[in-house]
Amino acid sequence: MKPVRGCVRTTATAPGRDHQSIQFFSAAARPVRYLDLNEAARVARLSEALADPAALAITGAIYSAETSSELGILRAALQAQLRLGAACVANVVVSRTQSLSDLLETALLLKEAELLRPGQSALDVNIVPLFETVADLRRCGEVMAQLLALPDYRRWLDSRGSTQEVMLGYSDSNKDGGFLTSVWSLHEAEVELVAVARRFGVRLRLFHGRGGSVGRGGGPSYQAILAQPAGAVQGQIRITEQGEVIAAKYSNAELGHRNLEALVSATLEATLLTARAPAPPPEFHEAMTGLSAIAYDAYRNLVYETPGFERYFRESTVINEIATSMSQI
Image (tube, rainbow, N blue to C red):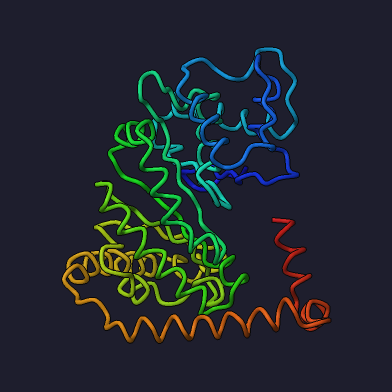
């Protein structure tokens, strides 16, 4: 778990890693072998625990260092809200979201930290799934539909103004499938998320995890916002500004004002104009889908299936130096 401005960021757990739900259920009065459960059984068990106002964690129980650390961070977030106001930590971003259970596990952590109070239908932070890989982007609509179909979650979301935020990963999808497939997968994911939000009657706010380089979704922000699918910009948008471009965009007040002006202008234009824009012809969609499939195969064959590519990449680029410098920041 790591902080993002105004956010706490946690990583959805995977088999073999320290799994907070395993910790809680194993130490509960009725122990459950959580990893042995399939997705449907996990969702059912998590829903049962979330519906119970009582805490699942047992006072005095010894949990792993990671579980204790994440609970400590969320409890510190609660104290910060009490001292400084709810806006100081407003979001929990769930990295590597792949399934509904990933989000309910985060909700369980929030409940244990008293940031979620089921009995009062009160949620003190936004639960923000982050879909990062190509496969996750293709599945995001299904996951969000499952989440929004849960009556308890809808009550919690209503307590947050009925606005669902979803974060989209640019750099990881690019590393996973290459530039063209990443961009097209992000576009298709946004179209699907807009449709899901409309179906369930919630307002959607997309959080774009873009970086400075083209390989991380970088590029002119004005054009990028205008290129969003119809309905993806509803008077608001969130975009990360990575450290390497902050100086270029905000090194002085006049430059910063110009960049912020471009963001506001593009957001207004996208909201007012793209809602009335006609849908692209079906043949355009078919052409992009075909190009994406070809590009994906070519990228995967080169990067993941070419013997010696990783060694060549490490020895011919400055990736090791970049990784070392980033680890020291």
